[in-house]
Length: 406
Image (cartoon, rainbow, N blue to C red; front, side, top):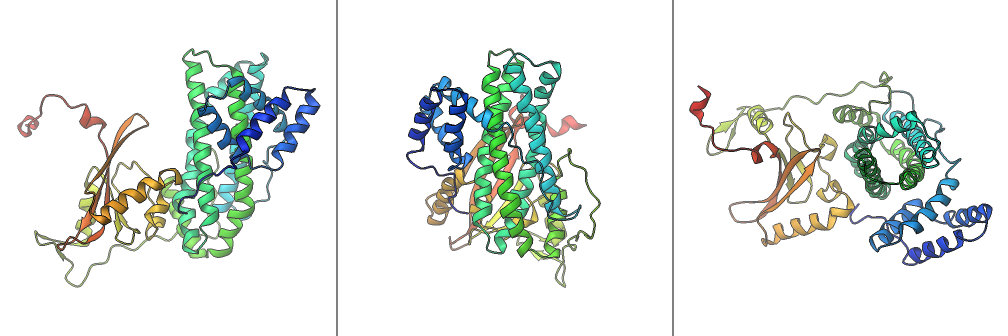
């Protein structure tokens, strides 16, 4: 999975610029023929990446809209909502494929509403559908989270790394496009003068990407998973899928033929305690202490494989048991892989003793820290990640003493 990203041919941006010139000439039939011929040889994710780079380089919005108009016509009859489900209800693959069809249907309706509004023919139902679209996209993220945090790690255990890595890279492109759409809709609701043409363009692009992505999963990724994973692993997948949560818009089927396996309680040695030099604790007590802390802790061993993560009541990032034994490099999207490699490399060489970051996420300030673990001789034995919601801490003022509780 290392270093996978959406690569584009160096000439693709020039080809896109030439295509726009062709689309400005001739009638609609000529334009559509030119666009279809162009798209037949390319993956939409490559086109999306090239368009993103052109946008950063200052490509005119008028050129983008010319391309988008052709794309909307091209996508008019392409929405792959009908697929033969590979498994029975209750199987994780059946659920994922159901979600594919539902997501495509909802995005297609949002696209149609945006096109009607752009043409001046929309009504209140179209406005309502677009207002409801950001929450729908937020809910649909669980679909991708379950794949990245559960299904992909299990496939990697069987030596299947290429397809999951590519799918994760495409997830990043999809998230970027969804974020763009949500920003447009939110700004429009606040009175910003954003054209419905631009919104229709973005939603049409998202629909195109989802069609391509879901087709690859249905016809390549999922059959590979079914071919190598056994019934016990699928039981584990179900349990860990449930831990993340299903998308609310798909019915939760009875788990026909599946009895989720619940992990055994922690086993202790004959003495029941571990000597920690500053005290003795049972394995149960260690687990309770880690989970009571208001932070998420993840330990990666010296071989770069995840060994442990805590499960506090307030979870910030998704962690599932499927990641145990997984390379830490595979637990991050390709866009941040170089940073992970750099930090781990500097921990191992002794050049660095801490890495600190903070991000804004869903109205919260999240503080993320990494520390190397070294033994008494100074040898590198792994790294620990500590994640904390510090929103409330940053808002503290004055002081509150213990006696104030009385």
